[in-house]
Amino acid sequence: MEIGKKLKDARAKSGLTQEQVAEKLLVSRQTISNWENERSYPDIVSVIRLSDLYSVSLDQLLKGDAKMMEHLEESTDIVKSNRHLISAIVLNIVVLLALILLTAAFPTNVYVVVCLFSLSVIGVAFLLYQIVKRI
Image: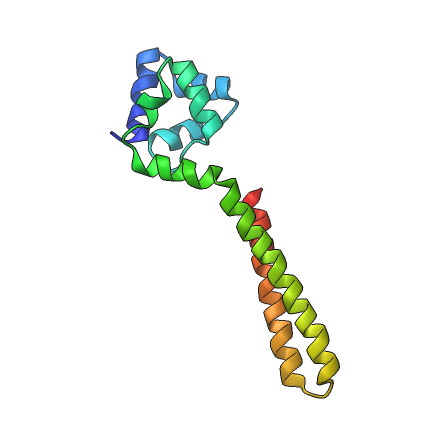
């Protein structure tokens, strides 16, 4: 059984409306609807709060739902996220150093400068993506 159906069934058994659940979790009713219809998934804190609210074990809510487990693993994998962020920072430092050194070595070669500048823009974009993804 998928997490959305489990959440909807648990809410119904608890005798609560989506509005009541949303109010208790400090989210919108639309958020509850999205979780129940699997348009989005709750974060781990919300899953724990739902488990408490519905008096249902986390095991009952999560077991057997591969998509939800994958979502939780991705959203809580801090080590992997940190590795990506560190990689992006190192990439930017290397490209910046290469840009400075090669510009000094070949001041008249516009192609080298343009190529390295393009790489630095890509590196900065990757770094910003990693930062935004963490927020």
